Length: 219
Image (cartoon, rainbow, N blue to C red; front, top):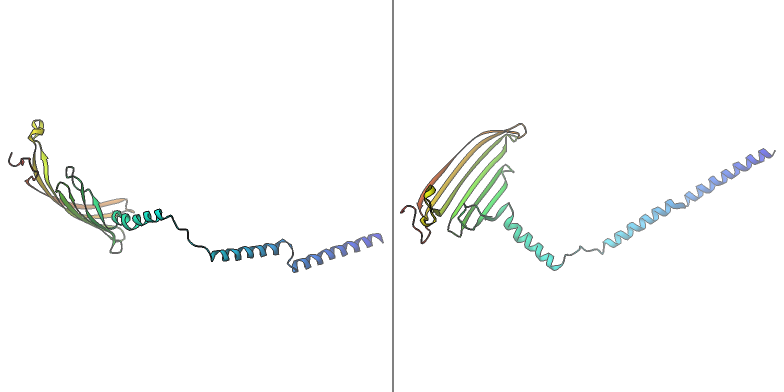
């Protein structure tokens, strides 16, 4: 009799616990409902805060520097488009400077073009143009050509061999014209290149233009 009463009491207790748990879950009680409610509150607060946000502005000095770098320096020294070319003349020509124009994206990226012209403080000048037509026939064929001109108007000359001396300084003008062509084939994922290249150097010597120095031609 006592065992039966204990069993009935245990079943009643378990049934009561189950009913209370179901009722608690239906009412949204416990940590789960609270967590969802807190998450929604945080999202609402973030959305409200975003309405009043503004981008961070750099200090005035930094804004001016960024403007100079982006609108002036980057355009001058950028490797693409119009810019400035420093150098490009042989030693002895002095400081040289001039315009240059580079385009690596012509013909849907198959043609690279580069052109520059420079002049120096010693009245030397020169220029060059090059074209590179590449990635033809699925990357197997490439055509290159370039041409240039250089005028070195006052090249020093001190005589020949061991008899040369600084007191025998003279000068002459030297003009170079160059032309090159190349037909190249690329194979095995660009690991092997076969081709043919041809070019020419046309030289012309004229009297120098350095004032106060005799020309090499006369001496």
